[in-house]
Amino acid sequence: MKKIISFLLVNILLLSAIQAQIRLPKVLGNNMVLQANKPITIWGWSSPQKTLSIQFGTQQSVAQADEKGFWKTTLQAENPSFEPRELIISGDSTIVLNNILVGEVWLCSGQSNMEYPMSLLKNYAKPQKGIDSSAIDLTQQYPSIRLLTVDKKVNLTDISTKGWSEAAGEAMGKASAIGFYFAKQLQNTLNVPVGIISSSWVVAVLNLGHPSKVTSPLLFLRKI
Image (tube, rainbow, N blue to C red):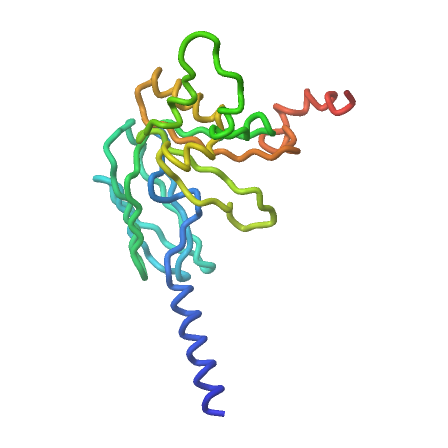
């Protein structure tokens, strides 16, 4: 009987410790890009009613968790910056996110054309004249272009992903080719860091990612 009671107490303590840990959505992480020139919303979960402090660069903010542990705070808009910074969130525990830039953040979503990864570009015919730029890009590093690829999993309370990465190596090979070249062109034009979130499904439908006022005039396409 004593062993059973001890086992239950240990599990209760472990559960309490887990609930006390600060948790962030997976779209917030190391190496991410925060949208420039817009208020920055940071959110997550912790112990219910817990007060948390949030620091990003010179900005500091306080958030109060509700009865379910959810909290949210909004920081002031930041100018684009190539300077890596830390986001520090403190409460029952402390989370430090590193190597964060401020620039343009875009969601690249669609079907197989949008999903097509950089690593498969080598299967295309090489140009008869000039240089195959894709082959060169796959050997380069683009530290101010950041990539996040969403896994194809449904019925989750959060996205499934390996997180943000700089555009280089394995992360570059798995990235959406359209997404990367869009980011590269955008950076060449605006001279700001660029973050690309890739979430593509072969059978994705248009109206899932747009307001009804945008897609309703296009519903006739279903009959084609």
